Amino acid sequence: MDITVTREPMEALASKMMQAAEAGDLAAVRDCYADDATLWVNTTGKTVGIDEHLANMKLMRGRVSHLRYLDIRVNPFDGGFVQQHRVLGDLPDGATLDIAACFVVKVRDGKIAHRDEYIDSAAQAPVRG
Image (cartoon, rainbow, N blue to C red):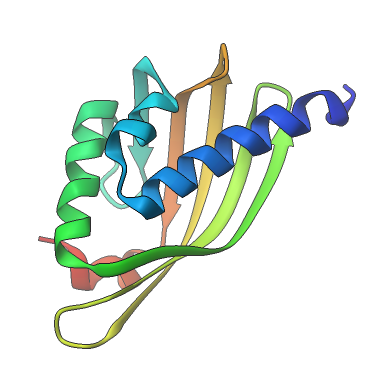
């Protein structure tokens, strides 16, 4: 496999997804995913569809202000990419949210078809509701 063939479109898709998420533009986030996309999260062990994921994103944005994503590293592979990053934000009590995250993303026809999300459950505890 020639990684240069897959690197550019995978990095562009990852960048589009993260920029939209940071901006709180859920319609633009939705556009990164296939209509039948699924997402699995290690802290719940559940697989959800994109609409439920977007609802969860909206809830998180309501609980955390100044949400941002830092230290984003994208490693493409044939048919997808692995992304590592940190989620930072301000909690209502003045504390700073800082969650380490890793996505394993499968891409189909230029859209995210499935995403496995691994996050630090202890760091996420302040925003669980």
